[in-house]
Amino acid sequence: MLAIAGDSASGKTTLTKGLVEALGPERITAICVDDYHRYDRTERKELPFTPLHPECNYIDIMEQHLQLLALGHPILKPIYNHSDGTLERPVLVEPREFVIIEGLLPLYTKLSRACFDATVYLDPPEQIRRKWKVARDTQKRGYTEEQVLADLEKREPESEEFIRPQRADANIVVRFSPIEERGESDADPPSATVLLRPTIPHPDLSKIVGEDVRTALHLKLLRDDDGKPVDALHIHSYAEPEITRKVEEAIWDELGIKEPVPDSLGALDGERSEPLALTQLILLFHMIQAEQAQVS
Amino acid sequence: MLAIAGDSASGKTTLTKGLVEALGPERITAICVDDYHRYDRTERKELPFTPLHPECNYIDIMEQHLQLLALGHPILKPIYNHSDGTLERPVLVEPREFVIIEGLLPLYTKLSRACFDATVYLDPPEQIRRKWKVARDTQKRGYTEEQVLADLEKREPESEEFIRPQRADANIVVRFSPIEERGESDADPPSATVLLRPTIPHPDLSKIVGEDVRTALHLKLLRDDDGKPVDALHIHSYAEPEITRKVEEAIWDELGIKEPVPDSLGALDGERSEPLALTQLILLFHMIQAEQAQVS
Image (cartoon, rainbow over the protein chains, first blue to last red):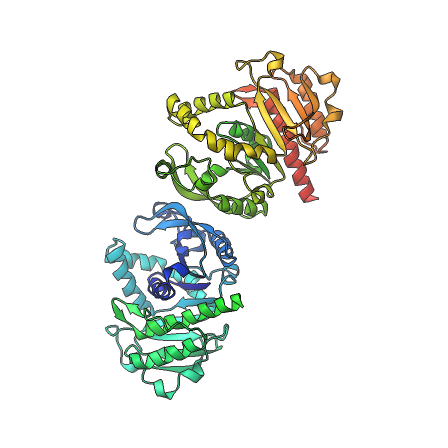
């Protein structure tokens, strides 16, 4: 069971979609915990907080449902309709072989975190996330740009108080962003920085990511914001597919399974993004490793 | 935690209402498990079964929620709107000091039965239940008499297969009905026959219900349909309130609590029904006894 946490429009759905495709939708249950909203859009207008606030969500029920799914039990999951902002009849969700939980607050409580085999926090730079949010909410959710910007403003204190602290509790922190030191700008496809915290066993990248692949990606030992040691994997937006392919296969080999590396990884607006593909592969590694541990 | 099972219009709501009133709504959570319908009214039109069929309900989720409530945890309960037949947004239910679960199928599975301290099955004669159902569904649910009768016809095989077998699993079976041997007819207010099965500890009625109260109620040792010994308490529709009051107080005394017998019991269409009052008191006895056992 994998958690993907992050603020609104931080890339959770894109990341999840590639994992579902790679494993096959029949083997995976992917749900969004933003459906645990306590109030509908009309009710929220009267209230002093945004949907990011834990009090605006059934956090205890979310915890309960995560525990049930982790134990292999079905749940009757609430449904929040993002297009009209209403709460609808719940649906039956039965956990398959793999479960992905994405949303705003899946890592908010200790009990919820304890349900996961691996936890991810998506951490794009704020100005990029804002760009993504404006694009999505104007194109898909029927808002004007002014409305989205006002909403971002209103949400900022709760983002700071409740969403961003989850970064500290993730095993993996992913930042898609241009790397300024390399002269990349917002116009370039994003590179990725993947922080691999030594809180779960990662693939042994120090052996795999050497000088020979440096033009595409490199691994750097550094101190995290809190001073703790962490591996930072940088994957360049213009990484050569032949090189990342070699790295992907080396990671995949550690799992000791017969199937080839799924070739659906990295899909982004109809193109293949090498940073996205490799990030998804690392998450896939963790999901399959957890499943192997459970079976054995 | 008390279960009240029975077919549609068998008196579950009336019985429950008096218990809620007696204990005080702030101390009791009463829910109806018919909300666990899997399909709404429109979807059911295409399906070969009625709402009585277990496959027409989320039975496994009902079981799960009963277990959670029995353990003192909250649930996010589905809602079925009886007036328009739609499934609505779920509601948070937190178990209070006492919990009553009423509905068509609360005793259907072994796991669900295991959640209760006492279980009741309402067993009115079929012709009386039909009369009650026609009255309620035409007055409160917008159906014509013809529609209700056709519906009863359609439901009969599933009533037989799924609802009535729950009678065998109840600790208490309650039949409100005129007692023919006493010359009572459908026009009289109903008497009650309460079967007290020796599967849970009942109040010691053999000491309380003697010859001196015979004009109002009497206790009879008999064999149940399945040949097993059972106590049958008959309470006459025209029982004198002074006599039933004495019996009520004797039952109440066994609990050893200070509060007087609640005087809200037996409310039926604005009148007081002695058979209903005494039946409710026996259920109240079981709820309070279970709570005392839990606390001590």
